[in-house]
Image 1 (cartoon, rainbow, N blue to C red):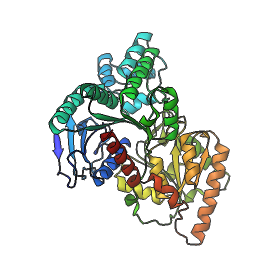
Image 2: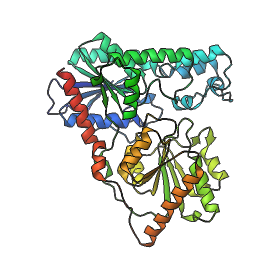
Image 3: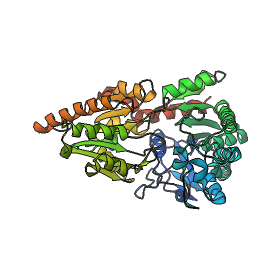
Image 4: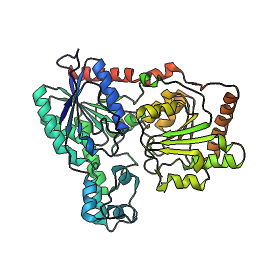
Length: 465
């Protein structure tokens, strides 16, 4: 299936690039944003991208309003449904193997739910081993044969000389590896949005699955012509792990934001608004922030009627608890609003009109959540729950108008929120508008116009190497 909108003009014949990405609009996954922005600015630099992805029916989260308006060829292939899901049908109760909880037969876990649930009561070692192998490198191995066949056909038919694979899912990099082995003349960029082996958020693992993942990762890193990492911390970790790989093959190109997305009116809020936009994944949780707000209200330091908590995205579960129940237990149900996935423009409007943006980044020292850059561009104060020594903490300190705090330090969270609430009261009393306190010069390196140009330069250098 190929949805060709139109052919971009002004592209040189040799500037063809195949971008292999599981997520692409209408996918609601945050990973799709990086590829869309990259594609947009590669086109501006004269490249002619072709997107290789999956059929929309395979996405767990899809945005109905999302569309492809970039004028690129989008090739969508089939894929065998999630391997772990198929295993669940065979065994009847895949969740019993993962968490020991009851679940109706046939009610399958999504990829994110699999990632969030650590094995607690596996029936036996074999069951755990089998499940870990079914998730190696991830649940999306079923895409590999379809994608490889189509990619090789497209490369042969169009003369594409460059391939970019973006992961996770890391099946994308296996597709790139097979392409490279089949067509050695192709220049291959492996784009890592997350670490592969050094990742605490991986689902069920065993020593064997970790060994296989490590072996596959090594094959990818050593065969790719360039390895792009989204943070300097990730790049440093991988350089140290693969010291035999030449230093010029490692490149850091972060995620970023598109300034054109933020031509949104900024207005003062009638309530002190704390917002979280995105998915609450793995064992991360905003519960400590909720507790801090509840205590501030109980201590009469914050007027409850002036507080508004907004959660947009996949937020109805947090660390194994129902979000609504947690809020109800803290007597905050009447000040909280939980919405499922909304159109991007609505989410951006909520960002810019918030007083505090909540960022959950604990236990991912090498990564920065992609939404952090959009938070930065939107302007409001950012409360980042993460370790002091982490890539996210480094970024927050660089851009300013943010605080980094351990997710369990409720007293510190209370102090920060009280300070922001007091400032909000002063602004409201003076009739002031929302203030943005970040230095635009500091933000320039994170604009997609700049990042896309860097990616374009990387591909040009590869062409002529």
